[in-house]
Image (cartoon, rainbow, N blue to C red; front, side):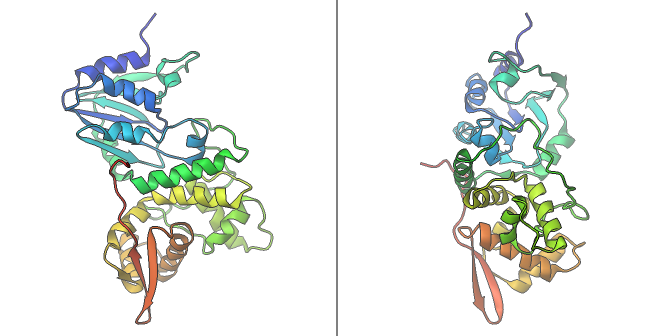
Length: 313
């Protein structure tokens, strides 16, 4: 019988001397630790995955993978909400295919999935693309994801497949610029829209809410708290939020933020309206990250407390 995919990866991991790159949407802590156990602790490590509350709540992925990675001397743990690829590089040898870093994916549990990993040269363009759309996972992101997954455990949810379900509408949020920005002017209406209660809302508001929900991958739930904690968790690692956190380390007046958004996304027709919409989302879903004050006829945004990439005590 041929060795399992996981055993093949273990052999190559044990021979790595410089850098390991592990990219997969689903990861389990025990599997990641098993691979790292055979790896020289001096080898640099970069892990890229995605976190989604429903995937954590149903046991598809483990948030503890972050701790397993960051216990190493030189490690980086990143998140990419758009991630579907599986790519594993050990120095100058790479594997590309269908297997996630899970026991069933790597053949370490019966019954195992029928998966494929093909030997490849390193794909630098792919690694650059992944890095460009990923963010470093932080303590606060992990806290929000834990809260959201716990809230979902009380709901009637179905374990996801490797693909998020098609929610039945077109995602046009990415058209025209390379970063997502919220479209729905009333974030408080998102809950009613996902629940199908939108007869009293305008067609435009409903359409924009559906586009935003599709982008964030929010599944329908009956409990408002579970819904809002899910939105907060997914919003927390959107690239635009990470960029605003950096830009607003020093308090910024509305005009400065408007001009920054106009430069960041030059195709936006109305930067004032877009800035207002973004502020409404941040106030609604991430009040622990951002504060807003009034001063000299302008609204001022500031970061309430720095987020951290350190392991929590």
